Image 1 (tube, rainbow, N blue to C red):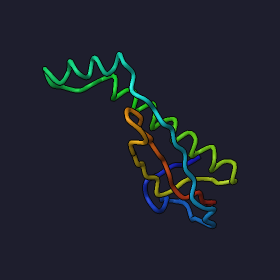
Image 2 (tube, rainbow, N blue to C red; image 1 turned 45 degrees about the vertical axis):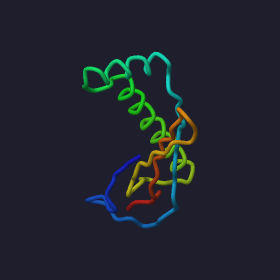
Image 3 (spheres, rainbow, N blue to C red; image 1 turned 135 degrees about the vertical axis):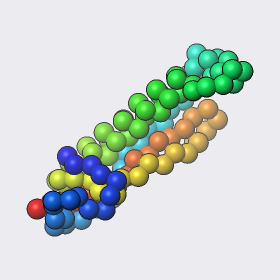
Length: 104
């Protein structure tokens, strides 16, 4: 499955747009990560635990989006975007979405 953030894929022609596909995940804060994040605010720098959690979340949301595209018979997903939102205190959603297409 080809996945791109662009509207086209060099070397391919889009023959059909199959529709919007998306994948998401909602993650809650972890007490251990919160403690480390609080300590980091004192000295500054990257909060590695949160960085790792967000990367895992993006990967899971992308995998779910690709699975939906495969179920539709797509060859690729174009114009991929990511969005985040807070859904409740201490919980955030990562959403991956794009357009499933057929290629020639």
